[in-house]
Length: 403
Image (cartoon, rainbow, N blue to C red):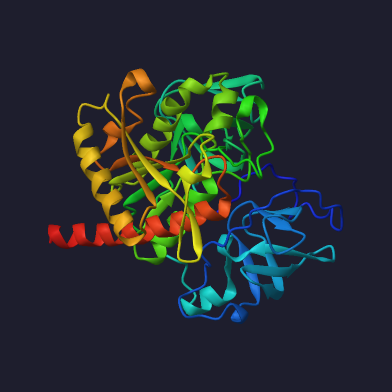
């Protein structure tokens, strides 16, 4: 429930408004509305921001970001346009926000005023796991102001990007990296599925703003939006799921680590999730494949075009056959319901890449390549819905067998 980007500060550092829309995002995907099933979007009068969120000049991902809203902000709804709310800004003027990244007053009324059970409470404390530097600012370039040892606990005063701002015992503030601590954050519901992105900034040719060395990466419009959408669809289908928001690319930069450390870094995020959510059983690492022709990475089924899925299983995991069995079953079920959407299962040894891909965590661990650089965000969102559809049925059958 977030679109990751730097805060501009204030209650929506409003306004660059009017302007100059030269953002060139050609994909504007529809994702899961957050309204209760069967409820009209027009019943809602107020949107409540649940995480740092982009407000745009028009109803789509292709419109310019005109402001940032912070968790806790609320805006009056002036109207709707498709899957977007038109909201009134405090300084005057209007902007648009996607209905799948916010909550509304209509949702709270429908639930009798109770908070949705799949929304995790905010973390209030960090727990130090080992000797850790506390810094004067949110980055590795800031001075070390103190050292914390294993077992220390600090209150969280705020967050900035991948850093927590904490209160020291002397009352002063310092910053600690999110990836070296645990928090007391625990969801209300028992989540089974953990969706993450080792290469979280992988994007597509038609939207990527970083194309150095053929990378096709983007800080905002990237594969993490696909994981968020899948988690939302799974929740709607009764499968509690977590979409990890760790910016692995930023963490590598902060620690001056190269790209080859990506899986070691995402492993830390997985470990923290497992420590906080003992119920997790399935771990889906969603990627975007390389510069392959659309004839390989896209398929049209009915009137929709989907990014095709490749399952990658690392043979360096001694128990890889269990993961492969899981992948084979899902691949077959995907192609049965959505003919041609799966490209099958690819086995990779350590000589062909990482070789393990964090799959030793669980027999329910998969690496999924969604499409390639020549696909679009919308095609990937379509695939996220199809995968969630099949995966939800698979999990429900598995639960029935266990009873």
